[in-house]
Length: 101
Image (cartoon, rainbow, N blue to C red; front, side, top):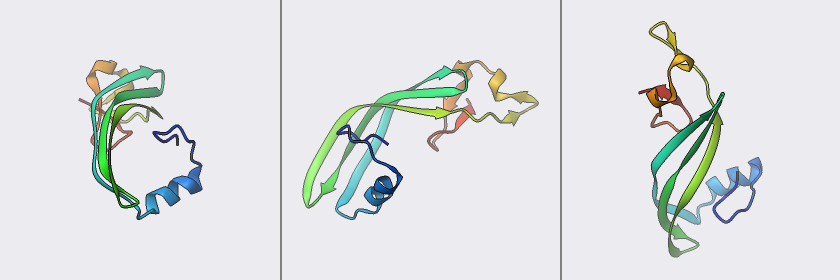
């Protein structure tokens, strides 16, 4: 995972960062998300706003993000999701899951 400062974290570093009690988020919000489809890959772009306390100091940050993921298709009403045009698909509230809109 690449963090906002541009540092690349491996799996162990990512898990350690999640367990770090010095990081206390108060707001983590993503908005204006747009999904672009390239075969079975989805690229999501959007804006984020986060704030909280880190090492006892208040902080706030806003920025843009890009996230990628593989699309896992599901069958619904005898029609596979993959047969639906991209404008009929949306990101669900659970990140990374594409569902019919």
